[in-house]
Length: 233
Ligand SMILES: Nc1ncnc2c1ncn2[C@@H]1O[C@H](COP(=O)(O)OP(=O)(O)OP(=O)(O)O)[C@@H](O)[C@H]1O
Image 1: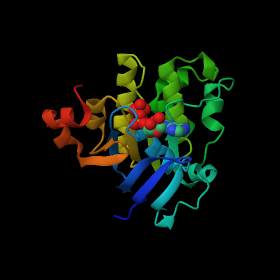
Image 2 (image 1 turned 45 degrees about the horizontal axis):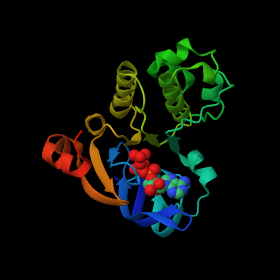
Image 3 (image 1 turned 30 degrees about the vertical axis):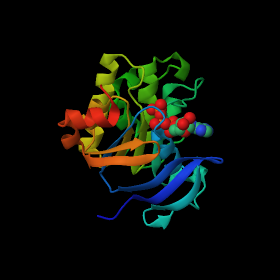
């Protein structure tokens, strides 16, 4: 199957400070990849690089076979990448429905489908973004990214700081996306076991380099290796 996104020997960072080194990554349609690593390893920087938010000093990035480095950051979302950053970036004064429809693009993801995935958003449709709980805001951020009808969804720590019951709801929704949507999903997560139980493939980053790549199951089953790569859980 041809790649959606390919990175070859990518070096990237912020201004003069280099963070990522020699990154190789291939994402095919329907892929789900957990990006793991200790604090400051470069996980968010990898997502930011895909979105064109960093300085790439060498290497190649292709999107559907075309040179992606020349595509301005502002155009990347419209080319089919939905990014849910840690900060969520929802519009506080717009209603839930307005947040979902403000940047929507036509495709399989409609308001109804997003509200079916996250019934809480349907219940809260008239509430403003700033009236939502953290978990509801996270659902809204994911729902809004889906309304862009992306081919690739980037989730940066979607469970961070949420109560266990909400983590479970979001996890079930992401599982459903993995099983039924055909979307490619990259999930950055501190809760390694959770991410490995969702994604099919795993990549571990340390000091900006990929230090491990495997299927998620084999890493999940190898506790000593997981501890060596990420520290005790
Ligand atoms: N905007 C920025 N400008 C300069 N340096 C940055 C910026 N954002 C992150 N960094 C640095 O890049 C390195 C990697 O950070 P990054 O946020 O990618 O790590 P991470 O693996 O996502 O960490 P965490 O798990 O703590 O979120 C860190 O040393 C961080 O201080």
